[in-house]
Image (tube, rainbow, N blue to C red):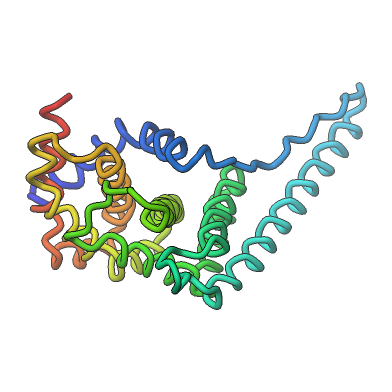
Length: 259
């Protein structure tokens, strides 16, 4: 098995064991973000006649179609606002409350689509790209995830808001990058170089188990994002150029040795 194949295999094993805990922990850390799901329709009582059963199925399908259209319309209207928003309050250096809440709404827009067919999520991702919301999310991540910045030192309101906005942005791109080729290609270009530099800066602290709990959570989300990108063949050459294998392997080996 080649080095790259071993890397993808190890990453897949790690992902299978840690994906759900990461989602649960990050949702808790993000102040119990409320997930809005589609209301499940109560099934009407079935009569003995086959025609009634078919009518009920048709009605249910129409309701689901209308809900899907409404969700995508909401996504479009939401994503169109992102690029023109004021991000930072110049007087405090913190992200504006409106901007942080908007990023949270983008995350919620994905959870609204959790139970719909995958093609609908792909449509939402295309809207995210078209209206430049993904570019804005990448900007937040590359700005706040720079090496040398300790994200564990959350001592003032401005820093707290910055870290919360970073967490929201990371979790959003993690969800949207799942099995989505277009999003993966953009992330490989725009955020992976910064993510890898941050991971390299965390190596010693991680091996010594001295990373702050918050930074460990960020690390896990970053690995999830890289996993989503790595399973798409179009991104392999880009990840090889960035020497992703050597950076990530240390964390994978450390993970397996601890478990």
